Length: 159
View 1 (cartoon, one colour):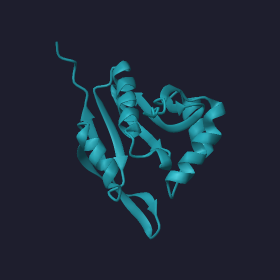
View 2 (view 1 turned 135 degrees about the horizontal axis):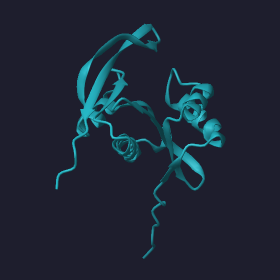
View 3 (view 1 turned 45 degrees about the vertical axis):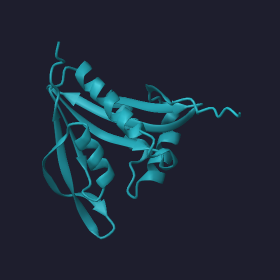
């Protein structure tokens, strides 16, 4: 009998300035219209909740959340293309929701491309509902693409 060892699951930590090259590389690999390294730097400088999911020194995903006035906004969630489909996106959303609760936010918003059915399905499965649309929000190959605005109420834990 041969034992097959599963890889160690990735662990969370706060995003650091030294992570920005890896984060920007993942962003560029995952998205046609990626955020720049400078945008991530500005998020860190602004004090947003920025976390990375790391396995053996390599970042496999990250998330960015802003909060204020009892509301939070998921600004970016990304999983490295070769790591997608392993539940990392769900873990990242859960972590950002934990940050929102820690900041005593009552609701969380996000935008998602209508052309991203996997992300929409993930968000809906976690309790987000479509709240509205932002016309021409995202750049697209042929002009612009709307954004679906989704929201989730953060209820007090029962018990």
